[in-house]
Image (cartoon, rainbow, N blue to C red; front, side, top):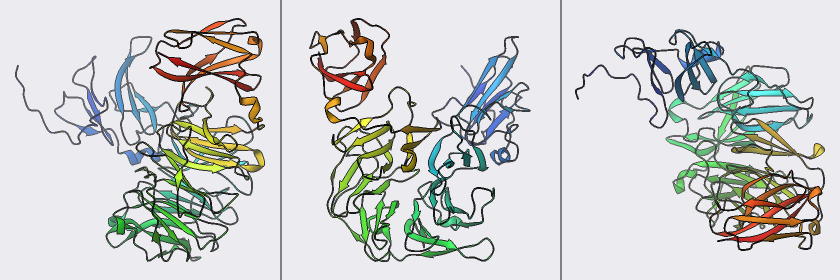
Length: 513
């Protein structure tokens, strides 16, 4: 009925998160969060920071990290209240009204948000990763679940190896870290930082190796007032910890876009490809000095990370471009070196494809997508969902194929790193429906789909697949007799029932009305 003005908050709380908190036990105890957490113990009359987020890097157990996402109050089994604070360094609790906090998520959660995961080219046991807030990490893979060591704190992506296992990594808005020996050193050999007033728009600007020069990378960068509009070539200066940086002449803001993807042909290092945030593609035939715009509109890049250009390992004239695919194909392909393109998304849902890689002969192409992990099987000429009820329902941000281990290694944005081992390629005829082994009825179906067969002892799993290849739901099969699949929740349309049979699949088509 009436209100009294108390004071103005130091920061505006996140608009779409539960980050304004009032204790049920003591209503004078309040908290809210944005980048940092703020606390009042006098009913909102005074507010102070719990701690500045930078303190987290000096004491991760007892300080909150940046971006406070959630605050709430719970009670122990002894009815003692405590506060839970969720942030980008994990989950912290407090039993004394935020005078002290304790991070309870330093080990064992396996929830790192990875932007990029790379395996050391000279020794595939070593894995390096760049993550959101959990830093630059490494592990010596001895098999099974791995514990990663955080080498640097912060956000890192676009990990790029150059000769003799040297590695370059990108920090937000244009700061590059270079390690001459990433296996033993925790601190970078050299760094290069874009001028503060010229730092770009893409959170982690794209970067790739320049195969024409020893130990050199090329990244999106600024010149003048144009951010992320130029290419910057970087190489260690060889003096102290400095990096020599050269800005190349072409201005990609000519089409009002920012650089979102860079790729250089290793078989012909004079041929460069650059994609921009507004869907433009440029080619260079002189090592990045001059570029011409190509005709097609390409998938646009993600605002945090850009997009991906992938040159076929089998044929360098075959070029794939991946990115946002909500109003267009998420992947397109050129077979003439980027002159013309066609859609290459049969079987993919409308999603963002963050990364592509393939095996050596191009028979399998792997995609890390917002909708999950996918594989393109060349002889089937379509993409397939790889999650198989094992991989997490999460954004898959990076993928690389490790040829000597036949592993597709995926980095996810919140559920760690997942390996898919390619054990064998099944003949096409083994994937075709076996109409004489399985009967389904009624078809069309309204509520329950009956499944009848005499081979249930060898069927371990069922799934419902949409007509465009998306997994709807599924489950293990425990019965050795006929069973029913619930269909009442499905929208009207055409679907496939997929049964896993001795490592292969049986597909049955049905209509939901």
